[in-house]
Length: 132
Image (cartoon, rainbow, N blue to C red; front, side, top):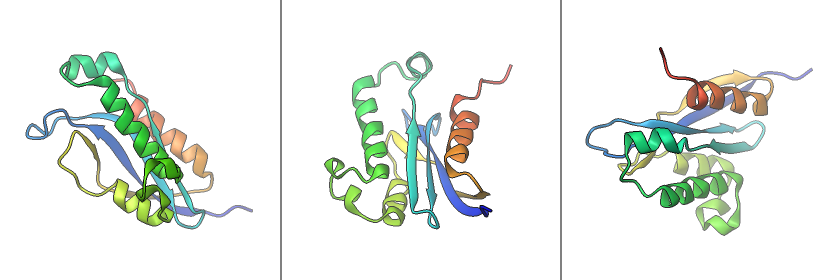
């Protein structure tokens, strides 16, 4: 019988003008020590981002987000950070930054199915429709 696993996650955000602290959620990073699991899932709603910050270079932004995904997967083509163990990669990915691509504070939780949890968090925090 599968047990509960402690996990940590952070939301990946685009913060076009850091001094204004406005952001758009574009992804989730999820880490579970027990399962040695670290994955990031991202998407860019270009229409929303264009309305929010039309001056951003969309291709550069997508490359930066893809680098985060590769680092989370331990893809060595992403550089030295990607070669670290999952816990260290997660801490590096979620470290406070004052750049356009940032993460939220890290939040804990318990789950039995880590992949389903990543998909649920992604759906709730990134893909959720805006309030009416």
